[in-house]
Structures are given as structure tokens and as C-alpha cells.
Length: 219
Image 1 (tube, rainbow, N blue to C red):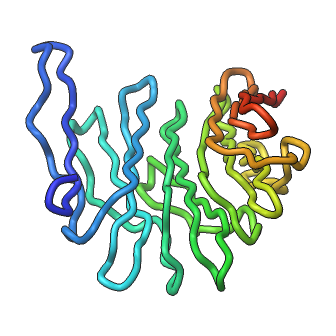
Image 2 (cartoon, rainbow, N blue to C red):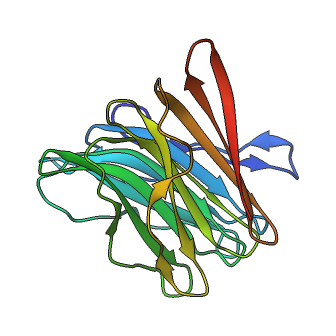
């Protein structure tokens, strides 16, 4: 980010050098919280938080290897009245992208998500995937089959780690739920990675007595 504009630079494996910076946003207003993903085909998607002049929104853009170009930046969600923070993105092997973020909704921080169809070039309808009152630190991963995992902290008396999963076979998100017992102290910094054929592993920091790193596994 430079002067409230979003730029990228790509590595050229032929020349073994970085290409010139390319601007990929469109409005030049206050921006932050950049995230980027690339799949095995070399296609890339990036997301960020940027003001539209009224509120922070989740934006995204994509780079197509076939076209050799970045597309046009677009808004991922259109919910008015709630600030967006912490967008994260994954791109599966079939080029379907998913963005998750947290957004203020009537005084509560809900977790939202939206899906991108690479063929049509259209985003779907953004939807809430967890209605916890104080969700924080969303992160995202995808397995070898294209199933998507969202992980985040759900704050209460203490912050516990929760997750939800998008199933390719059903085309829908499941039910959000905790993936650890409610801790005596708060948990934070959740991370997740997926692998074929449908596995995912998560890690996070738990603060109960001495800090430690906990993990869970989806099969």
C-alpha cells in the first residue's frame, strides 16, 4: 500500500527479477489488511480492506496466468452500516476463490464469506457464517478437493477458537462451532492449512498458565 493505493509486484522466473509495480485498486481511499493467495496454476487473488468514502469494505482482484493481466478491483460485500476488518482469501485448484472477513453488524462482529466463480468472473452473495457477538482474527484454508475452512476466535468470557466449513459437494457452509473446549484463558492467532483428500490442520496460541500452542485436525 502506498499513498492509500494498492500495488503488487510479481516475480518473473525467466528473468529472475521482480516486475514493475502494478496498481490493482480503483478508488485510492484508505486501505489496509492485505492478503494474497496463489494456486498451483499460478493464478492469484488478493483481498484488502478499503474505504468507499463512507465505510470500510472488503475488496478483491485477481491475476490470470492465461491473460497475463490483473482484472478490475471489485467489492466483495455490500452490507451497509458495518465496518469490515481482516479479510483473508484462498484460491483452490479449480480457481474458485473464497474471501472471509469480520464485519460489524448491529454492534456484533460476525464472520462473513463470499465465493468467486473464475469462469463467470462473478462473486456470489456475501453471507454470514458465524453470528457470534465478538468474533476476531479470521483465517482461511482450502483442501485438495476445494472444501474451504474458516477459523477464527469467538470472544466471550474467554476467546475460544471456532470454525466453519464450505462443502463443495453441498455448495454450502455448515454450522459454525468451537473446535476447542472453552479455555480458562484466551486463545488467539488461529491458523489453518488444508491438504488432499479433505484434511485440515489448525494451530493457535492458548493462554492458560504458560502460553502454549494447541492444534486440532479435521478428517
